[in-house]
Image (cartoon, rainbow, N blue to C red):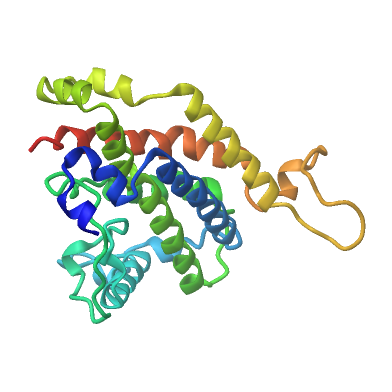
Amino acid sequence: MLFCSTTPLLLLQLCSGLSLDTVRDFLTREEDTIVFSLIERAKYPLNPPAYYVPAYFAGRRHDASFAELFVRESEAVQAKAGRYQSQQEIPFFPFRVPFPLAPPYNFTSELYSAAAFVNVNDEIWSVYFSLLLPLLAKNGDDGSYAATVASDLVCLQALSRRINYGRYVAEVKFRGDQQNYTTLIRNKDKDALMKLLTSEAQEDAVKRRVQKKAMVFGRNVTLDGPVETGDSNNGRASFKVDPSLVYKLYGQWVIPLTKQVELQYLLHRLD
């Protein structure tokens, strides 16, 4: 402990436990959480009434859909339980988050304080409800609104945690090449920073891995006969979530938004 408290900045990464390996392990495990959350949401139809603002709310200052109200109230309860004491968790409605009632815990602060605020929860919310959900859920209304939006919340939180973890990715990359990053940050060279942050080979590997996880986790298992693999002409129907949708989710939204978080974090890294 004394070693870490008296060691200069160059050994901060060693003391905090933050490294490329720990970051990669976290992101890989989050893939499992995201795929399983999508499988759970796909169990329910679209259930449109959960996302409409009721007529009696129209024009009011705090009008909101049932889904939004559910997320707000759930976040308030979870905040009291201490969920947002960790920097890895960011609420979608922070202005409504009360003080925690849970016992305090001294979470390690591995982020640069002036940049820790960076997040893209507004974009995640928009992408999820406007673009992803219509592709994930089948048309229909079975009245299971509470269960439906509860699964929405799990999806949203998993995506937020994974995408906003880009702050940690950026911090590790900055520590590993401070000289180059510092020069680009001071010059506000966003294009060069984005190029430095991008590894197309790694991104392709991630997209193919999550697609395979969707195929493995989403198979229909029966006691009689072989496991459904989705290789038949009716393959898409045999998966609980279309693996190509998970590939698209990461390729079009998760990875680009994560890099946006990384870029914005770095632009504030020297503040």
